[in-house]
Length: 130
Image (cartoon, rainbow, N blue to C red; front, side, top):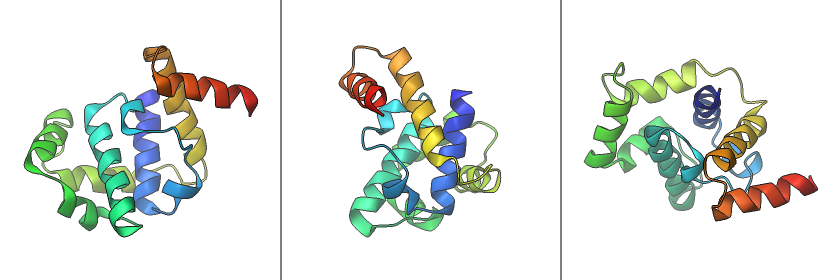
């Protein structure tokens, strides 16, 4: 379920980059994603938000370096290119409405994988108060 949530969240963000600041918990980082290629994509999105205050597939493609591109292509063996993988994430997206829920599930799964990390502790504290 984690991988599906990762794909759904990334796809929702590709369709509406404004969700990056409005629907995501502040403690969600690239490290929370289980799949390495999803970590890279989220990191690219984060960098684009800092540099441009928005992103789309062409912006992400302009920011990617060769090492990141190879990692994404290696991890998603069925995709012939990073662009194809990003388009698939956007096109197969179940909807933007549940972006926050997807993010919370990703954080919760990260906490169970890495219970001693700072992010897991933050997630546990903020989740307990919400």
